[in-house]
Amino acid sequence: MSAAFFVTGTDTEIGKTTIAAGLLHAARQRGLSTAAAKPVASGCVMSADGLRNDDALALLGECTLTLRYDEVNPLAFAPAIAPHLAAREAGVMLDVAALRGPVQRVLDKGADFTLVEGAGGWRVPLAGTATLSDLVISLQLPVILVVGVRLGCINQALLTAEAIARDGLLLAGWVANVVDPHTARLEENLATLAERLPAPCLGRVPRLAAATPALVAGYLDLSVLEV
Image (cartoon, rainbow, N blue to C red; front, side, top):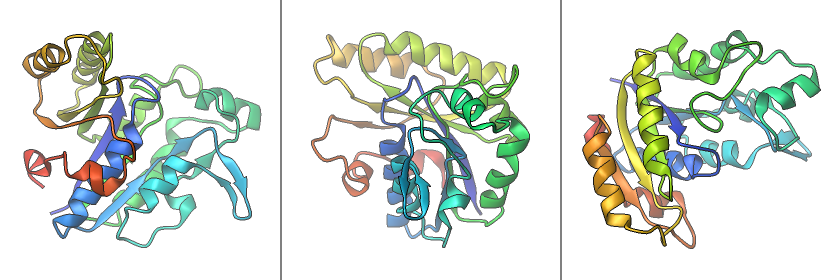
């Protein structure tokens, strides 16, 4: 039976892609077929093949199904700014309708384990009053929350978990990604997160000099997700 999840984070630049690629690698190690999507990405670089995003390429590299780049990342923008602003500058309507179809096509490929990675946090704006969370609601995907462990992360994590619940979605699990290993009272903070977040922890990933998917996978436990 196939399983699919949406990966969000407590903020931007907290390692969503690092963890998502690690989760995909862990699934591959279990003999599962994998697929991924990053429906919108800004900060892309022009290549001979067009605009390319490092995060989307990292996810594509962990997919066992044959996917084209544009299937994984259908909307790519060059400016390293909020996606809705980048889309506006490019004259693209960034709404749920523009994102849902491409993501659904990846989901329909039926991989054993599929991840859809967001951009930034849970309430990243799209066009008008819509947010990226509206896409997740439309797809009814359970959510994996990447907590960037640093000062202030408890508040961000709990607020995100509350928003996910208010949106009627399941928080399937969370990952502690230690972006600041010098965080004061690190163990106490992790214990507080474990006590207060309404979902199991899939793993604690330390700050790594080279956070390859294979190395990150060693810190993650997919059995918690029952896939």
